[in-house]
Length: 241
Image 1 (cartoon, rainbow, N blue to C red):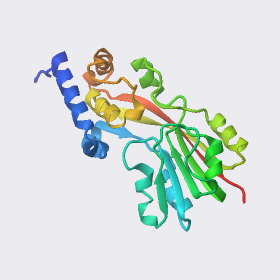
Image 2 (image 1 turned 180 degrees about the vertical axis):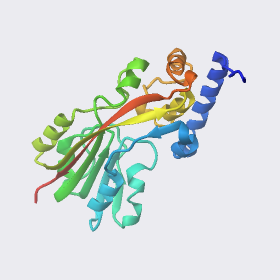
Image 3 (image 1 turned 90 degrees about the horizontal axis):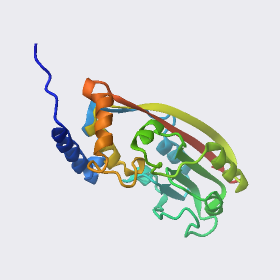
């Protein structure tokens, strides 16, 4: 019978540091799922935000994207439509530096935004697509990390109310929950580094070593994956003609 070799804490630390260093490279981060393979399995919502944005933008002239995810994101998925796509990366969720009624579609993903401002820049008949993390997104993970949630979350009803107050008609309102299975802590580290909007602002392997070791012992040390719950909602609103 072959005895399983148990890595030491120092060996685990070295492996996790290597995963973090690799995932910090944007070229690696952009193909994280491909790199991790079966070590990382994440369910996806029943909707496709990029496909919805493409459908809304078809035949229009201008799209504004407020994307809180690092990398090309939604904007890159609209490049071939022949419309002007502006990605606004400003951190301030307040006033948008654009004139009234200047775009046909506004797409917001995983970032704070002002519903009044989104409505202001929309042309009559224009559409607003919002995909947000719900307040309980990855609640199990953040409970273990012991840190406040790293990215603005809003209750679905609060966002809906804000859109209605801004004079928009909410045509679609959906919520979804699905699992994320992470086979080992190295894969978890890579995910949190590649997508920092999911991690505490001060996250690092060394700073969270004790917590990472606890997570390792909670499942991966015994061949069991770590399982967390994603929670998201989708809102589609229209500005009346």
